[in-house]
Image (cartoon, rainbow over all chains, first blue to last red):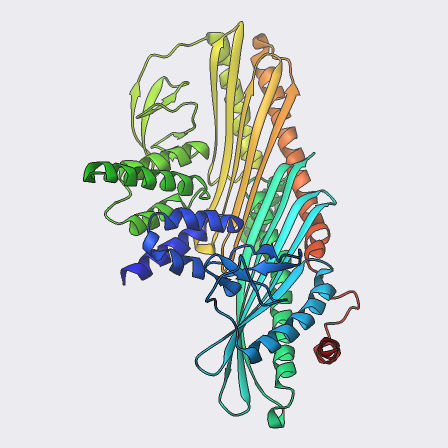
Length: 275
Length: 284
């Protein structure tokens, strides 16, 4: 199908461009194929934006609480700017949403010591539901960093077999940026990254359906914690470090190339002598 | 608006987007990006003038290296003419294939030449080649030296580049450094880029500028060349050391500031306890 191919090509290109510029880059590509705009925007992970209600209470703006150009606040369930005929979670789900936000806020406090978190829930036709647990953290002018930002987007699809088994499928994406605008030694230094992971687990709910809401929050929360921790560790120890390796194998540090050649020379001699 | 006018606007839009996307593509991946752009736009191929122009700009900005039978040339904005590149040293104009990064043809041409400056140029070339062999990835590396003016008033232009391209393992990087000097002043611009995209997408973009006072003695070409390249080498080494320090401090000054690996308690969050406590609070 033609549209699938074009979207696939767009995603290929976006993967080769800086991840925090994805909104701008996607918009550029969408101008080439305006009919596929919605479809492309739904498939991309971009840094999360922040909105606020009339009292200045902040909440995260995302695809998961958006209707048209308005965004729903998880605190008071209102859309900003206000609209008629908008999409809302069912009453039951809204109760779960309030509880989840309270608990996730504690998670945010423990791991992020700042930043902003929001959870959004929506109903699905199959008797299950889905939810997005989001965090946006900024770091400004600290220890030489001009600015840094972290966005985590955890989307969990929740299904039941109709009895007591619940299956949680999580897709987590982290979008990061570190910006140094004028360092004495390195000048302007900008590093951006995005990484995604999926995981699926099933659990038996406690008998009698008691406290099922707390059960959901615990299971989802644990999954979020595990996958976020994994991605953070990967970005820190593997991905960012890999860019360093790439640079240092392009332009060696002083003396390094000589010692590599020396080692290779010795290895060659050894091979010759002892076969 | 009639059909003709509408088409022109659409083509201009394509051109704008193609230029922007290809410009921001890491060196080594431009051909793949252009293929994908063709699929998106439809009814266009990589040899279309829009695509070729975007590729040409991309190659010049990244000091792309073009190989011939026994030579190579770096292309930059400086030696670029509409259809060819100028090789000052060999008095040639060179035509290239931007997609294959190959030299297509060369023709002799008469260029202004200053014997005193030629001496310095040759000495610089020698020193730069030595520098390249000592400090750079030899798979893809090169340098150029050009000058403008005469013995009483000159400007020399130097370019140094190395690339790492390993698409099967999803990474590539570029080191692009351009310099110019007069009798008393050396100035430089450095662009360092890296891209790793196995399952994820991480990009480094780093730029720096340098400026240092020097003293060029045209009558001692060999010595002057050594000093200039030594200064460049010193400045680039310092930059690299700065990068190393930054990377070493990244886990602490950046990642930890973003998100702790564990809460300050040293243990993971107790969901059971927290869920019960916080939801109870909500009810109140």
